[in-house]
Length: 109
Length: 113
Image (cartoon, rainbow over all chains, first blue to last red; front, side):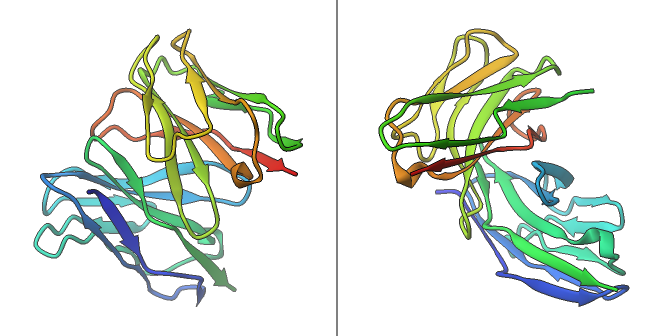
């Protein structure tokens, strides 16, 4: 079946540090891949997506590349800000939407 | 610009009580979804709908029922609440399925005593 595994948190970084949150998936065929972000007390918001192999999704300085050979979709940002503190969810849609467990990121000034 | 609106935002129930959560979207989306979010487990799909008058089971449908009588509304019902249904419930909608992103409401925090 379809599933998503992402690195456990919490992750704590200093402002301007480099961020990587790992995400790997299991699926047949060619799923679409997403990163969503959840700020405290709010619902999830789409951060970026990629719909086919080697696509790179990007938004607000975040990037993730769809790697079919390693079944991965790692989230990266070169320089995090305090305002990036949130929970990040990796997800796949293969006619069956599946989310990872979420990774809580805290960025300290 | 309301997007997806969930009511209520908070609710406390006693075991065995029933209630209905309401989700409304103003984006004319075809697809709507109900998820529950539990610590360490991400979001799990309860039920979904691909259009007015249709519903389908998701990953964890037991103990819940849904209805989509109008395109803009998707109701989630608990007929006899159990403590295991204590969770945060999120509604979402998307234009269609596949690679279309989902738009989420702010959630309903439900506690079953």
